[in-house]
Image 1 (spheres, one colour):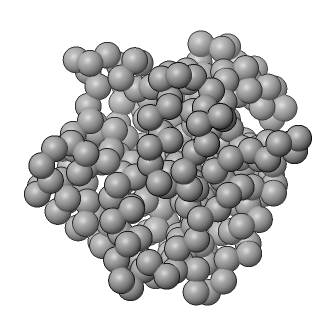
Image 2 (cartoon, rainbow, N blue to C red; image 1 turned 180 degrees about the vertical axis):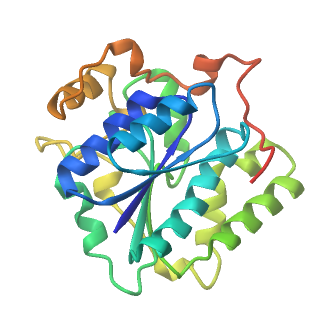
Image 3 (spheres, rainbow, N blue to C red; image 1 turned 90 degrees about the vertical axis):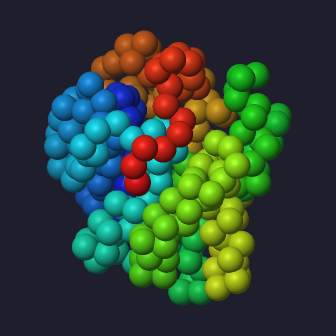
Length: 255
C-alpha cells in the first residue's frame, strides 16, 4: 500500500497526517500532492522531514481540481512504488488507529475502490459542516486498486464534467466520483466502508475528520505523535471561512 495526502496551505495538518500514518504503519510510502500556496515551501519541508515524496502544482489550482490532482498523482505514485492499493487522504482526514487500514488489507482483487458513505447528522461536529451529510459518499479517504482505474480516466471525466456542467456542482469531487463509480464497468467493484463513515459508539475513534472532529481532537493526536503545536495552526473551519469569499477558489483552472 502507498498513501497520497492532498494538501493546500496547511503544513501543520500535513505534518500531523504523515506522523500519524507512519506511527500506525511504519515506513509506508507517502506522497504529498500540494496545490501551490504561499506556504508550499513549509509543506515541502514537512514532507521531507519525514522522508515523504512531494509534488506541487506550478500555480494555484482550485479547491476541487487540486483535490482531483491528488488522485491522479496518487495513482501514478502508487504504480511507481509497486503498491497494489493507493490510499488518498485529504490533509485533515487523519487516521489515528491501525484498524482504520483494515478494510484496505481486506480488499479483494475484485474490489477496486473503497470510499466512505454518507455521514450521520448526529456525528457532525459543527453546524456549518452539516452540508457534508448531503453527499452519498465522501472522497477524503479513497482506496484505489492500482491499474484498475487509469489516472487519465479521472482527469478526462472531471474535465468533461466541468466544461459541460451547468453550474459549479459539476466540478465537485464527490459528485465526480459518484458518476465514475456509477459507470457500468466500475459500479460492481466499489465498496462502502462504514469504518470510514462513522464512529462506533463506545469504541475508540479510528480517524479524525474535519466535519466530525474538534480542534482539540487534533491537538491530542498531535501530542501523541510528538508534535508541539499551537491550536491556531490546526484550523478546522470551512475554506470559504478561512480564505473569504473574494479569495476562495472553487472553480477549476487546470487539472
